[in-house]
Length: 264
Length: 328
Image (cartoon, rainbow over all chains, first blue to last red; front, top):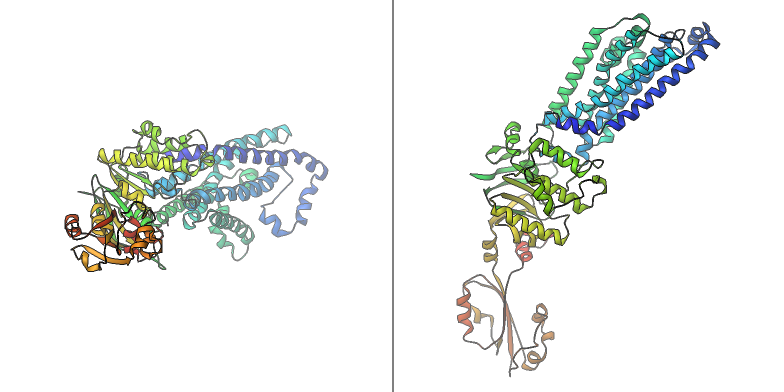
């Protein structure tokens, strides 16, 4: 078992390393510029925030920039992690099946004595490589960086946020996986998956507090709140469980669709 | 038990009926050629048998396993080798890594031996492979787990003539070992050389399946005969003679050079050592499917100047089935 996942995973190591390095650099940059911002603006930061267009601050979960926790929750985690990394996983998952079908490589894989379910799930499992790389290296970078600039934040909050965001990222990947079995062309699947994840992200944040707020419940981003975790140390484990179930449901849907699919 | 049994297989893509009620069976140990021009539906049959797509109606069993039942088909695939018409692999990995992946799932008892016959550069990335090397890698993958049945879609497509000969010898050796081979092709000479039996597909319908010798026998010999004197086509009224065409020329023309004779155009190596005769010469051509002795007996009545008997070209066999629009 897992021969396909290992094979695919090995070839994701370089991409995962690059993504991890890029995001770590991004995180450290954000962290290192914070002292300068805090010093020059001080308490005025939140007054500045009030001047932000409401849509913008809602979209990026900006609640307070007066503390390192609030700053990271909005700038780094809501925007960088949930939106950008979420799209990255949707995009990566979208090519898992579609690219092999498009380039006629799927025939070779399915000529092996393996079930279609196994092909889908092992391909999906190969995304564990970037997931684990990002989810272990980035929190270390954040903790080291914030300590270096002398704005330390609690280790447990950072670890909790990363743990809670794992099912969020797998849900984004699940959306990509479904797109990957629906479309026969990787580029279409990627666009569709990235579009859905971004669309749900913005819909949820913009609808929050409006009459259509309930509609945001279908967005994965509803179920992770970096502000609550970092600023209030509130860990919404039940929300995490919702995302675990969503991931399993999306993977199951992808399996069902792929089992029925005619590969032409 | 048949190694492959296709029963009423129909695949309707909506705009095209790729397979229309196709039925045939391939016995264990047989080398079966699945022939037809491009677009006839050969690949559709193979891909349905491999479970990549489901039939609109009908079905197939491979090695006794129903191809429309996934669990059943997986059991069969352990003993099946498959080579697609355009084998395609992840370009960023080496041939060795691909062999290792397949080996880890289905085994590779024969890998070393196969790599002696087909030797792609295993440590290079597939990106840098020539078409022939991709094909060689595909062939090793198809045979390395010592399957009982191999399904090969246009197997010699990417091979140069030398490799093609190596492939033919390889298939002959595999037949000796008892392997069942199902291969598709639109190249007749290739099929003729390696197959025991052929099925001919046209426009999604199976036109015929028969032993290749029977097919050739039924198609007959192509006979050209030059006799002294003026002879009509009735002179060769023997069972099995078809499509007689005769033309008579004067002695002078026949003795020197037949180039003015329209019927001569098919025989360029003509007239150089033909005995010179007085009077007219008749040349007849016909297809002969009967007993050669009957024909020889009939020749007694004439002075034969030249006789040429050859096997009908396979292309002619095909043309009969395709009514002239074959691309083979």
